[in-house]
Length: 114
Image (cartoon, rainbow, N blue to C red; front, side):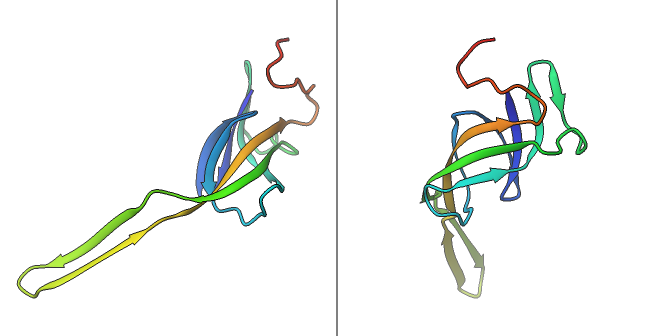
C-alpha cells in the first residue's frame, strides 16, 4: 500500500516505514503529524476522489530538522558594473511514515504478507 500526500506545496509518494525530507512542518522533533492523502493505492484498489478519501490519514513522526542544498543565484548588467549574488538554503523536516489508514479497511502491519 502506498499513498500520495500533499505537503509544502508539493506531492510525495510515501509507503509505511519510509523516511523523507519535506518543507519545514513547524512541529517539534518527536511529535506525530497527520498528512492528508491525495491518492491511496492498495493492490488493485485505488482511492482518488474526495468522497473515497474521507477519513483517510497518513501518520508520520518528525525525526529532525535539516537544511537543503545551497542554491546560488545572481544578476549582472553589462556596461554598468552592476553585480549581485545571493544564496538560499531551504529548511526541511525529516519525517518517517508510521501508518497509512483508511476507514473501513483492515490494517496489515508493514512487512507481512496476506
